[in-house]
Image 1 (cartoon, rainbow over the protein chains, first blue to last red):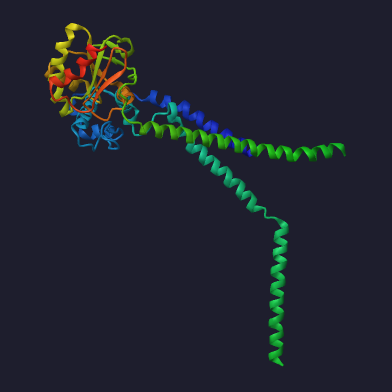
Image 2: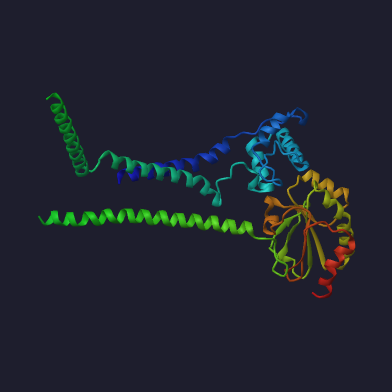
Length: 172
Length: 191
């Protein structure tokens, strides 16, 4: 029971750390200095665009989407980078404008929490089940083992006796 | 001796109750998860909003900063047109919609609202200027309005009567001014 409690405590700590650290991480991200739009390379634009999905054509990352709408969004990203926005701020802007579905990773709010909570719960549950199973396997039922051993020993004895008898008969 | 017997009788009860709670919790969790997944699937399979039923309420903030809430527009026929600057079929109906708006505007009985879907503001404004569109237009922020109307693309037009009931749905561009008038006029004669 203490082990179970420890597992729950570990999981709670993990969850609390995730909740606390996520906004801190977002807060620490600084904007960049402004630059002329001509200086912004396609690679810089695509580095942000690949973290976003086209809101019109489903399941296509923005950096490889061939439609006119996606080209316009990439230009918008270029504009925002030139204004000094960082990737997180651009992603936040896109989510606000076009909905959370444009994000490659769902934000941890509302029912989206399930996406982050359920897998660790399942993993921890699995670890707990395995732990219990291993404990049971380490301590096999003594009665069953004894009877099995006795049975196999008897079986081997009979066999050895028969061989010895056969050998004796042949020697004679 | 008494203590020992008490201990031996309590121990199995404790052991039994613990896994029961755990199992119950696991089953409740699983049932909740399945319920959520089921609801999400049902929602995804819903078709377009039904004509004759109350139109989903929405609030649109125009590019000029004016706010329009459908539920506050009772007594007027509302023409909600979903469009985007990158949408070629939208251009087909843009001029006709503006002509219709200019025809109905003096009467004050009809309000046209342009809902700009998944667009960039500079391109949207350029589009409005190109087609000289004067009725209120604003972005569908977070695609919340289009999601509540379960739109499948652009252009789409929803006409809502004076009581807030959805009366007409067009899931493609209007082909003429006459077609727009044919959709609106019956609502003005039989409010």
